[in-house]
Amino acid sequence: MLTSDDTLRLNILISTCVAIRIDVYKLMVIGLTKDKKEQTTTLNPPDDYSKYIEAIQKFLASRVLGSMGGYASYLKRWSRMGYVSSSNLKSLLKIGNIEAVVAVANSQSLDDEVLALVWWCATNTDQQAEIGRFLLTRDFVIKHSIGKQIANYLLEFLPFTNDTTQLIDTTNLLLQDDLISQQAKYRLWKQGQRKTAFLVGFIERMENNLPNNNGTIALNNGIKELERVNSEQGQIILQTINHILKKINQEHILYRTLEVLSNYLSHPMVRRLSGIDECQVQAKNVLRQLGLDNEKIKARLFLAGVSEQLVVSTISSHGLTGSTIRKKLSNVLDPIQDALNLLTTP
Image (cartoon, rainbow, N blue to C red):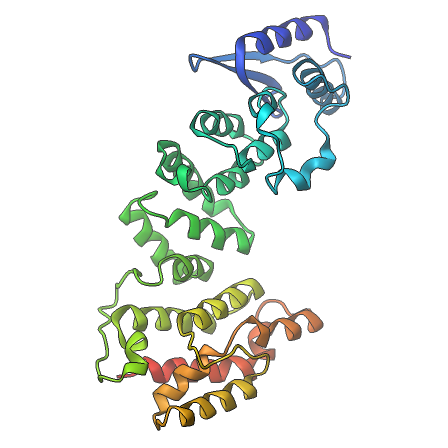
């Protein structure tokens, strides 16, 4: 049951503000007016503050949406799939429920005006980074001034991110256009030499525009089948992939690195296969069909056939983690690295 004072203040926020968020740590409800001014109400819970916050959310939802039960939590999955009506986007930003904010962030009807309100609602919440990543998948957000605000926040948040997939995804998103400065990109690249999840984001997003900090030069032997491999950027990406594989200790880094490698070296005569021996046999057969006899071309054809299929079943069935991934999969990774070493040797 809300206190009478809080009920009065909440009613004022509802009538005067275009967006409302709840700071569960400071026990405050904050409203944003049309002229971008914030109005703050400090809560006075009589007992259990978590139940009080829930009561406030139900009150806001009942007044704004006419929903007595609050925002339906079972819609969480739909929220992340963009299945939200465009008719009540702004209303969802006035009920103080972060899942409703996620729903709006994922809506296909999101526009410039609502974008600013979404990012304001996400501020200082546990889901701010998640919402930021959602928003940076939208083309119009990348070009919007708020896109850079989101990118700067995610860049500062990176050191506090422990989930490997989130590290890769965040890096990938930050490298879009000019969201962050060139200096920031170089710092991330340098940090990636130790924390290879960053490098995976680079090779996914910037396969033809990777930093060249080691003076890498193109290899020119005039062989058509090796043009992509021998270019400056080809050498950088293959060297980077080799570096990542040497330090493999996390399954998702391995999966996504192998996918990049296969995509980069894809060949119309080569299929992705689930066995390393089959990949090697395929490379020999295609080389023969092409009427060629060159170890580097064979290595390039071999790598075109690799993918996460080679490792996913072994990792899953044995529950491999950490350094055991590298040891258990040496029969797969060693031939791949041998081929990479050959292709990056003048």
